[in-house]
Image (cartoon, rainbow, N blue to C red; front, side):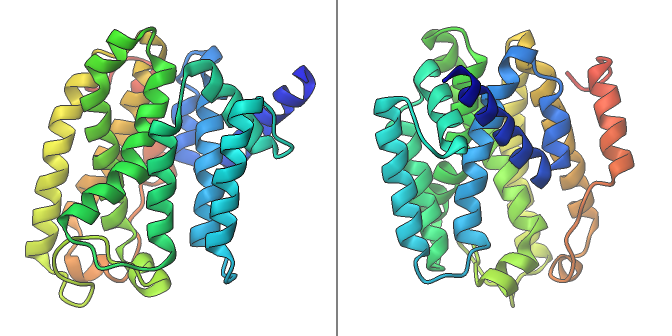
Length: 274
C-alpha cells in the first residue's frame, strides 16, 4: 500500500502541475512534508473541474455524483483504486478533512453543470463551496491544532473568495461565451461595464485586506507559499484594473512567466510584502 500511496501523490502532483504553472511555483515554497498533501487537495479539485468544465457528455451530473459517492466510501475504507482520490482521502483522513468541507465543494460543482442566474445568496454559496472550502482544506494541513485553525479560518475564507472573484474577472469571456455562465449577482455579460468591474474589484480588495492579516500569522512551513499566491493574484488584479471592461470581454488576462519567476524569487528570498 505504501508504494501505491506514494504513486498516488505523484499522480496528483502531475495533474496539478500540468494545469497551473503559477500554483506549481507556490507549492515549491511549502515545507517539503506539506507538498504532497496540497497536491492531493488540488488534484481532486482538478478532476471535479474537468467533469463540469471540459467533459461534454450528458452524464456529467451522474459522473460528479459518482465521484462524490466514491470519495465518501473511500474516506471510510482509506482506499481508492483511483489514485487521485486515494491521495486525497489519505490526506483527508490524516488531517481530519470531513464532509463538512467536502459536501459544499460538490454542491458548487453541480451549480456549474446547469448554468444558473446568480443572486447574491447563490453567488456567496458558490464561492464558499468552490473556493473558500478549498482554502480551509489547505488550512487544515497548515495548522498544528484546532485553535490555530479556528483563529485563521476567516482570513483563509476571504483569501479563497478573493482568488475566485479574480478568476471570474479574468475568465469572464470564456465563462460566458464558452460555458454559458455568468457568476456575478448583477448585470450580464452583455451589460458588463466599468461600473460593474469597479464594484467587483472593490469587493475583492476588501477580501484581500482581511486575508493579508492572516498570511502573516500562518506557520513558517506554509507562509511563503501562500504569500506567493497572494502576490500572484494581486498582480493579476492590478492588470485587470488597468484593462478596459470591453477588453476583458475579449481576452484572458495573464501574468507573464517572467513576472511569475520574479515574484517567486522575491518571495523565496523574503523580499515580498509580508
